[in-house]
Length: 237
Image (cartoon, rainbow, N blue to C red; front, side, top):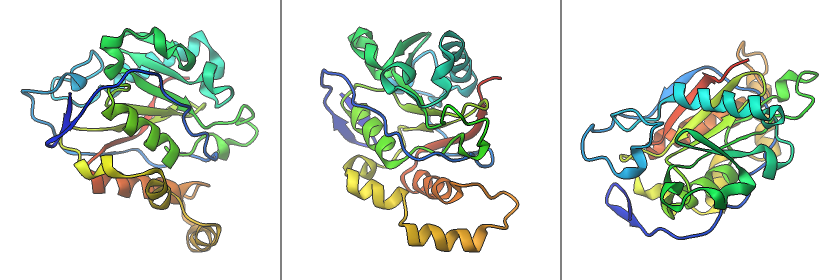
């Protein structure tokens, strides 16, 4: 059983679906959203070799594994073909997305999903290198976490050497696990008209980038539900 603030979830067998491809954008400022975690009596899903003693993910270790995965297959830094480019980090092992069933069943609750939204031609259009986790990414990860199919963190990488990490914490609000796909989409995205209005208001901001609005929405979402959110983590290059 997996527990988060009093909720219990039963583990199920089977593999994941595909992470959401999303749109393409650019990362924002570094930051860290999320509270502290008690250092004792942590459930097993927060005790992998990629976690610190207090249950928070060790971003340096994750970054090292991401760099290793991209050295093995450079196209993993971009979106490309999900089955080959997206991957899982399971302790000190790397598995391609379509090799999920090769992960030992007892370790699947440690599997950190990693993928990119960056296009292959991102160097020509650097503002398209990245956009944050979208609603499809979050919905897939959260649902597979509560079924024991994925770990407590999800990483989204940019081809320019940065990434962001979302974390489910023991203190994360249980309401998160009641959100459906449509609710998540409403929370993490806006209509064309709303995006246009936001652009008019913020286009001259010194930190402007294409998906600044979506990144602000994700920050607010993480704060509201008690998720950890690490931005601007470097994985190499």
